[in-house]
Length: 369
Image 1 (cartoon, rainbow, N blue to C red):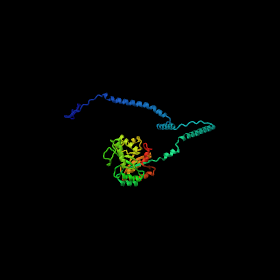
Image 2: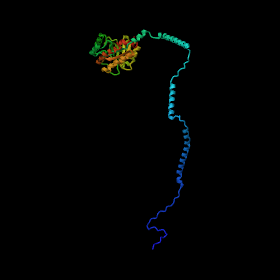
Image 3: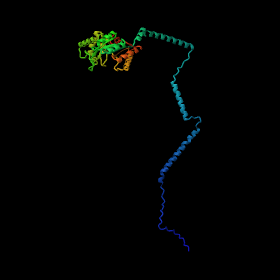
Image 4: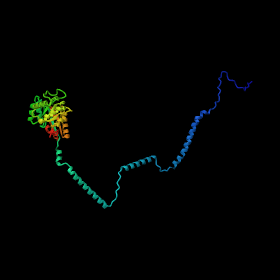
């Protein structure tokens, strides 16, 4: 017999897990509020954009075809600005009033007559002011002059004989007194018609710079002692026509000593050359004050005894003479100095620089005439 199906639901099998009961959750609207707000803002923005764009599209449709783009407008502005600048740069042309031909001719004639008269007046005014021909020729005839003095003569006759043969007669030699060949050197130079001066030993800041010379002028000496020493020095150098200081960096700074020296030089008719062995020398200044013919050394030729250095110094002397018209240099009785001078003096003489004895160039200095 078939079993009747019971209407009662089947019971779950033993050991089967119970299915979880699903409870229906209640929907909360609070979680959707931010999204709703954002969506509403987007919708509003779109509506506003549509409202704004509709009239603009109408304007674009109604815009005339001949309208220019922004680029073309900028180009036009640039062109107009360039034209305005050019107009400003161009000078304004004066407006010329048209006059009858007869009036123009008369005005031109009057203008020409006035111009001719003014030119004649200017010529008359300039003629008396312009320098005379003689004055102009005198200025042109002024030649640059150099004087070179060779110091420290008296210790070597061989070098002196070489110098006498190689150098022109315009060189002046300064002899130190009481050297081995002081008097013989003076006799030789006088015989060969060279100019001689006394190379007077004077006190230096450093001791032992007198080459074993006696009778050195010192700042401690009285006026009578100075006169006595200078008399003895002159006896050791016959034919001396002037003097310059040998060393003397201390002595030439002493105003009283220099005044005594200059008074003695004036009484003997001697001129003085300041060798400028110190930048603080007052010798030249006091010589001028005492009315002694004087000059000052501008260049030392052979501080550097090399040929090239001496040559450059001779060139410097010549250029200085061209600038100042007169310049004095001092060199020493040395082989290189004599050799360079023998060739370079001739070089500059051919170029218009005149080399003269110290006694001639000293006329342009101090109170000399």
